[in-house]
Amino acid sequence: MKALIKVGYACNENCSFCHTLDIRHIDGPTAEIDRKIHRAAELGHSMVVLSGGEPTIRPELLHWAKLTASLDLDFGLVTNGQMLAYPDVVEKLLEQRLRYVYLSLHGGSAKVHNLMVRSNGYDHAMAALKNLSGRGIDLSVNCVITRHNVDHLIGLVDTLLPYPDLLIKFSMVEPKGGGNQLFRHLMPDVSHVAKRVREAIAHGQAKAGPTGPRFAHGAIPLCLLPGLEHLYDDLKTHAYRTMIEVGEPDFFPVDDLNKQHPPACEGCALRGPCPGLYNGYYEAFGDAELRPVHNRPRANSYNYTLVDVREGGSADACPLKQGLGITPWERGRSLFVRNAGRLARFRADTRDFSDGELHVIKHDLGQIYYDVSRKPAPTDFARDLVKLKRSALCTGCEHQAGCTGLFEPLLDDVFTRDDQHVRTTIAGVEGRVLDVGCGEGPYADLWAERVRSGCVDYVGIDPDANHLQQLAKRWPWAKLHPMTAEQLDPDVHGRFDHVLILRSWNHLHNPDHALTTIVEMLPAGGVLTIVDNVAFGLARTQKQSHRGERSSARHEHFRNDSAEQALAVLKKVAAERPFTLLTHVEVGPQTSNQWIVQARFDA
Figure 1: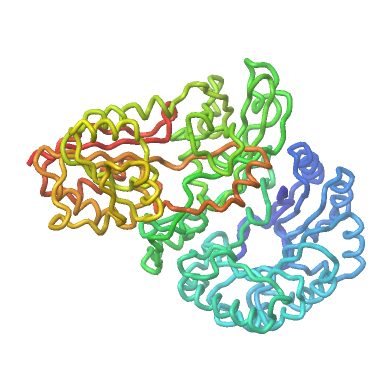
Figure 2: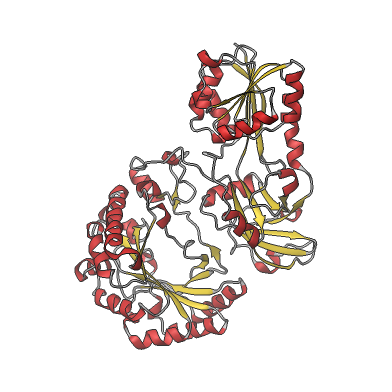
């Protein structure tokens, strides 16, 4: 786990796109950097990485490497490589546990690279590569793409093919510092960047094969890189947990606040792992270049994996305020749970959900649970999961809006309580009933009684024919049809007094189409009940997370809609059909993750 420390912003190059163009005169005092290295050790990091500006021009470089090693931490550098062109410098750093180098190289020739950095740095960077390659360190080359080098990426790949232990990364230029001041001069079309990156990676993989350098990309929307989504790379994929700038009092989590998912990304299956667009790029050019991906399954849960357990301190005092610190912990990805005098720290490294989605799930919706089962995935939520709630100590705290929070178990069975409305609905239905997505066979105790009494004519549909075959053996009284909701036809299947979509809404390929047909199949007085769940997080041990993430369970959800989103679809497709909203239950910190929308059609 890496901590990134900015030691100052001076540099021996003058890159046109430099993030710190306006503050190159600022350097951090030696004592301040020393203190931050000690703080990184306190926070449990295993590596300190120095960045700038250019950290290798600081005369304290070897001192900081020795200090880091004395704290039993590995050492890393984000650098242009000029000082690492000297073999004796590299040897001394390797003796002090240099294990990671992230080196900038923006062209495969001196002409291209030197144009980008506005200095004669190419030969030094290549010499640094020769000194570092083959030394057993984690070695990356990062190429920032602007208008000046976007059409020369294959040349860079050819230059780097002789170094098989490299990770070659292509990064979209960020509109920050020089990238902002020279925005129109430097900024290429992101779709053109993606095209050239695809070509360069395909070229490199074809020439080098499985034993050559690896490839990655950053800050490019994944929808523009089909087949290469798994090669996405950023600070988090490099295991950076926190970072600190010159003058800041404590570490902060790394974040993606400089990027956004614009309107075109709504409903895209890639939204979780995708970086989106830089804010400045979207403001200038919009999102017309994006090609969102729909109807691809995605996860509906993720793991918070146990990191450590320590003494929880006094029950009436917050351990975050009293020592651990408020700012170093990510609001969505870090989780602290105090119970029985102990404090457990968990972390979510999932790429299935974006940081924004994790924040909503954890803080706005409060859908975090401790998994007390030993299953790869919970099957009986009421028995397998214990809800976690924000501690009462957080109420009224001045840090509440920015802190990751302190959580405690809530021993109420929220799942059974919240499902009682569904059971009451089923117990009162009469007439012809359509159950959409019935394959798991829930509520058997209620349906059998209603059908056998003659109150209900039950019709169930599900796209999984195997599930229906098994269900037919248990439900001989049911009329079951293997089909999707999108295949319903009013002329063939007739009308229904009540249609239920029970925890299958997020499984629908095309909810607009399905709901349009279903509304047509409901007569005046007919009732539609939609019930489903929002995504949730599971606090688990390392063994539980390992077993769950390697299970054979497959993603079956196409969305993780809320009641509000489902209601919006209903209002759109039923614009010409007046209805009365009978029930609208949203998810919140005091509820389970189940929501309900129920409507009666008046005409």
